[in-house]
Length: 161
Ligand SMILES: Nc1nc(O)c(N)c(N[C@@H]2O[C@H](COP(=O)(O)O)[C@@H](O)[C@H]2O)n1
Image (cartoon, rainbow, N blue to C red; front, side, top):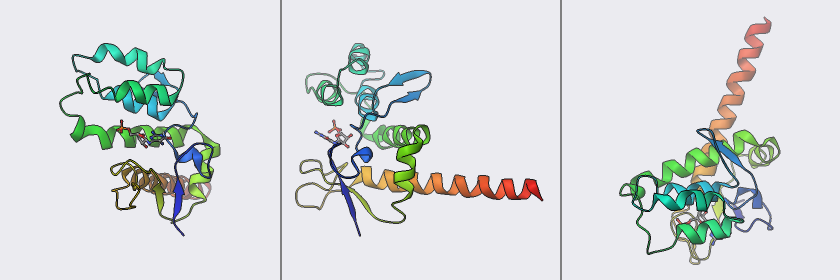
């Protein structure tokens, strides 16, 4: 059964980048994955001055609005790096917060889909034909965490022999 998620207050809302789960990356704290992701758009660009304002945004919606402002200049490699930027942040989120890591792991091998009506890159879009990159990242993070748990269990077994 495919699991659809989108808004934080809906089922599986903790899979949304807008969920209130902070992350620390390279010594800097970000209130949500969305704050981090939107700020990374401007690293090294002439508009990098906006980064602290995005980090301090009161809500992820506000951070997204700042990051989506079309008059600011994005970093030149954004289209190349954005999926890796997102994966790093999503992995950090689920490594940091045990409660939502458990929810992610209990989805087993189900397909995860960001049910965004507008986003055909990170989500499935209104026609459900989108690329669903956020869902794909969540499934790949789920697998990475599962494998690392298997390795730590087998290492502990080995050490106790
Ligand atoms: N508008 C909106 N509301 C939400 O609750 C969402 N979860 C999203 N989706 C997220 O928007 C981000 C993409 O932003 P850009 O279009 O690249 O600026 C990404 O985090 C999606 O998961 N959107």
